[in-house]
Length: 390
Length: 232
Image (cartoon, rainbow over all chains, first blue to last red; front, side, top):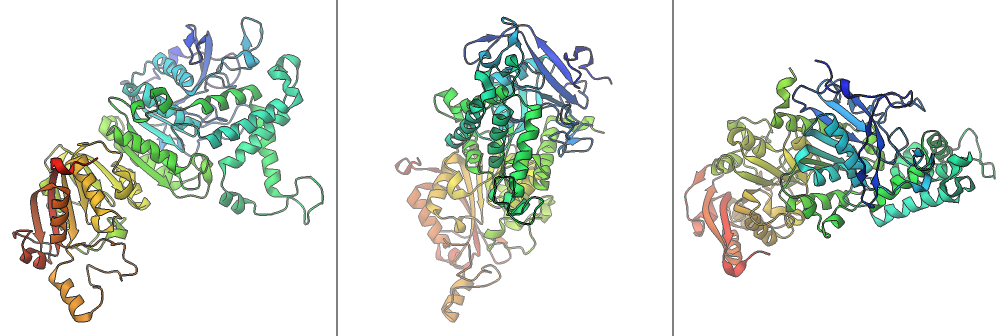
């Protein structure tokens, strides 16, 4: 059969692969602004079945985008979740219809601060409304409805993606069969807000940031954004992983140079992470998206009660954490498990032993793959999906 | 395949480890007895569910809504890989989150003796389950008594395979001790089954001295608390 979405798809105004949805009706945001019209850029893999029951929404993390399983249109780097997505993969493109949308406020096609404000004809910059995780999910809901999907088989994501998964489960439980938040939390911790603030201050301290108006003025706060990325990247790893990867090894030299060049491999690595990031990411988007994560607190939306965030009929949850993740530690996932237990939700919780830190969800982690495959297959059987699989 | 609560094994009557794809006759004998006590279609929580042998059996044969808690990562992962809803956790810490009456049946098999606060755990069981099924090794079994009497050493046998300094079983009790705990908590013993050395059930009053001497393990079905000993 042909893809159900085909007639609905419109190319975005760029030559990037993928699709975009133009939303005409304004969307009421948490900050009170009615925002719109706007655009949602998204990518899909696999085919929607005639029952429209095999759709999986992938929610990307802070620095991710919709190019889950194909080369990035700017950097050419492999898709960020090729470890999971593909024919025969854990997220099997021969069985599931995968959707991933660039988040609201992003910079890969969905409307964000670098796009033109129709009122001024200039980039939105800091006039862009502050968005929240819930706003991102509201936009995704519009897209899912537009694709004619009443109920997603699964919503899955790591880190900020996990926040969106939880928001989906809380806001639209009837529209989600299975929810898989990986390396996530029901709220952003003080420590994580602190790290984000360091990143934002690095951007805003760059003289080329120009109060956010760098695009209009022809500047680029790439040094500030690179520093933000470097600092953040450390938090995605673990001491053990850094030691294993780099130790105190020197970069292309036999001795320290008694200067401030990148003597150590770890320095060189971080500089590389910073410099490649600025090619594909907008500094103001970084401010807005980190802010959205900071504001995320599911319990606060429900008078401080996390169980109250999950009323009524529940999706099946599979919560996954990693032992060496100090950014979203297991204790955060366990608090979530307890809240879901309190409402007698159907929960699986697996803590995976690894030294790879927070980034483990993006890496080759066989225990993660086996867990996800088992969970999804169990849900598919329960949902009667497997009868289409032949 | 992971052993059922590998760290907690000691009262295991059959040497063969449980298997998650176990056919009915392959299910460990005490688990089979527990499975027989559970009605079809009910909501079950198995605490210390190991690799999910009992849950898988109940889900398949009795269409129960099967959930589990397991301490070991290997056990949890095996369960989730097989499509079971299991959380990584332990009886001491993770039962308080469940609301009262969340499950029709809560199972705690061969795990009580390894908990830090057995009284708290049993209270939690009868709070969150309309029924609780608890199985545990009987430290009053005549062979254990005899071993201590003759050798003057902590018993190390087929069932008590760990030395005292290595055993995870920190709160061993006899059947009479357990009955006394149930009385102290004020929970009703709906049913009790005592098992001999070969895992065969025999009918003796659990409050009597003979059951306490002859049973290698006990399986108790508990329900509710008296008004004076209300949980939480």
